[in-house]
Length: 275
Image (cartoon, rainbow, N blue to C red):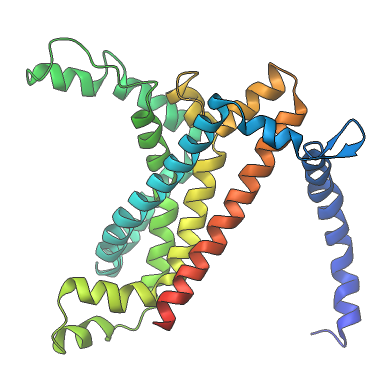
């Protein structure tokens, strides 16, 4: 298409400069705030951040919920994707449309719907009281469980779509061949399906984990001030405390955790494939 590499690079240069100036430069400036204090480079902002028990609790809670949402999404995603892939073409198209439909709805609307479901007079509490399991409404909102459910519902479609793509690219005779050779369904999944769909799992896991770490609306609405996460704490540091140093520390940790998750998933997939 291009006569030489120089011509291709010249055509890509304007887009690269625009991306660097608009996206990369502001991020670098923001992140540098956490390392440069009073004109000198130091890690005191990070040591000070982790010296507070509240910040440590928020960090561990964010990491835990991100891992839990990713793990549960992978389990449900494999089951759903496998079922969809084995449907007839018409049924497969309809099911993929249903999976994609939530992505077309605003996360704000999807999150506020959980208030109706999990509220004191919501559907869940009405069912619990109707079955006689409790005499009084349970506090379901502003808990880690509510945040977990909201994040799972928000990002599960991304995992399912990633795994559907991976399963469709898997050889059609791989599973029947493994069954003929005497493998049970657990062995089929562990030794055949998982290695052949590792790329889809890496993509889906990265999207779900990164989204769970950086989502703001869902933790803010369903968790409130009682279940702080790094993203809600970041908002408080900027809008309430006007502490851009602490905000820079939190932003840097979110970026590092996202990249670390992607690298770890890729290495686990590669190691599994080599074995």
